[in-house]
Image 1 (cartoon, rainbow, N blue to C red):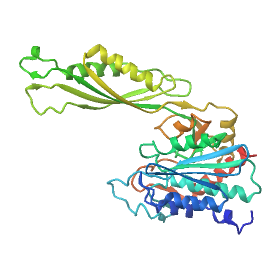
Image 2 (image 1 turned 180 degrees about the vertical axis):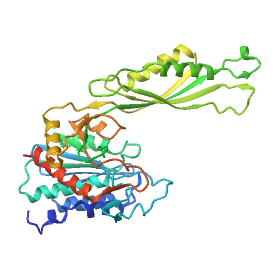
Image 3 (image 1 turned 30 degrees about the vertical axis):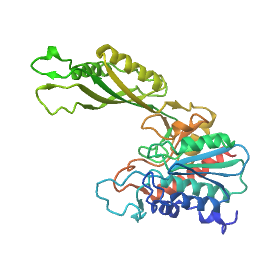
Image 4 (image 1 turned 135 degrees about the horizontal axis):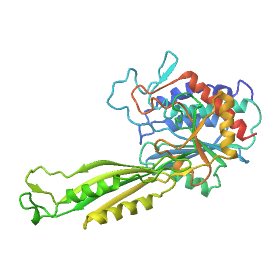
Length: 381
């Protein structure tokens, strides 16, 4: 493609990232972010599919129709700016002393801009082999119900499932290139309400204190490790996040007591098995209780093999850094993609994500685009 063509205009990720940051797309608002992205992708020749579910704007785009199909995935929505003081407007995209500031600079509008720039750089090298997809949602930082989950269903129905998917979440802890996420722990939230019999504290034999029963059950649930970890995962963890009675009186045994907990679990468990385990523990200490649970995602791992090797080799070639393979951290939309195809995550250094003055060095942003170009060349060789 000639240097004066659309690809040449999009090879620098900085102006693309600034344009995206200027859209105040605090989840679930889009604020024009997907429009900005689609303009970029159309200029590169992508076929665009705008997919709206509920209030969520999503995009699936593809350049080429042949295999292999490499897909980049990410999100244009961002978290709120928060109450902390920002030194610059979070939706301006200011560059100061070689650093780009703004909400989404790190997580993950910067990576989306690097996706686009990496594709543009690759197209400058000649004819595209295979095809490149973009799965970009506006629902990752929110409930994650009308975004990647539903786009993937559409992709399956329309024969668009890729051979490999790379999510651009900020995975690197210290230096660009130092970590690739090949899996994530699962997450389950459980709310428990234990019912007792209200009464006067001076006559406990006439009451049934649900607080005592709840405390005994929580002690049993937290007293021993869930497991010792597995080949690619650290030990699962259970954290009690709330205990609430709401009792303003000092002389009343309450009628009920509530608790909430979160379990981050490895591939030795499923969300359903852990819910059943909690229920069985509760039955030992309480006759009457209710459990409300929700599984945010199951654990998954893309085990090392040819696809992961290609990814890591391309990163090392571009950076000189051999990436560590890891499964730690929170959840991401990769948990949904893993149901359909092999997936890994690689993006910027994540030190400032979700913080005030979120930022990325411009040099890292440009280096990431170059890394993505190397990844494209390696997968579509």
